[in-house]
Image 1 (cartoon, rainbow, N blue to C red):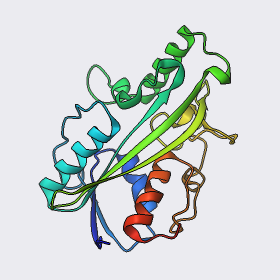
Image 2 (tube, one colour; image 1 turned 60 degrees about the vertical axis):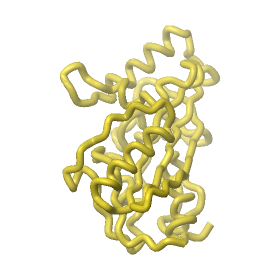
Image 3 (cartoon, rainbow, N blue to C red; image 1 turned 45 degrees about the horizontal axis):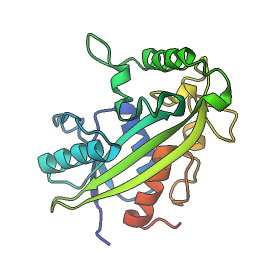
Image 4 (tube, rainbow, N blue to C red; image 1 turned 45 degrees about the vertical axis):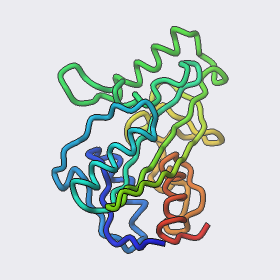
Length: 215
């Protein structure tokens, strides 16, 4: 197994970076990010989570010379044919620039209302996270995590980021927006067992294979 001593998180998203730092805290790694190094954000033109994750990881790796871990994630709503999916962040884009996730959550709710999806059985969805680890020698590796749930309205909670306030994971009474960080991760730091959130589940696979975390 290759030894990781320094890892670049290929993101400019402060919410994602905070989650990765929490997940990586138990490990003896020096962690930096594309945003902290001032690297350019590559254009995400892929049609799959794998495509976009690879684009970000490879661009960061080539620019920094460091092993780079990226995440491409999204909300896939069954009643909307899997939308917004890989375009999850695009639904939050404001006309003048920047992102407004409250606006994005309203877009999802409006689309569900238009389909008369008002009961939980018609509001099923999942969060998907695809991690890509790019090495300086050109090798790339993928780690996928998913979590099933339903969408609630109105949004509940101010924790987390993105669409967390409307996502109620199966078997839980709190949305991701209401959960403390440890509860959302759903695992004891450093154990490497299956997490709750999509990102934690993908990270658990990464940690087991690359950081030696116990299953």
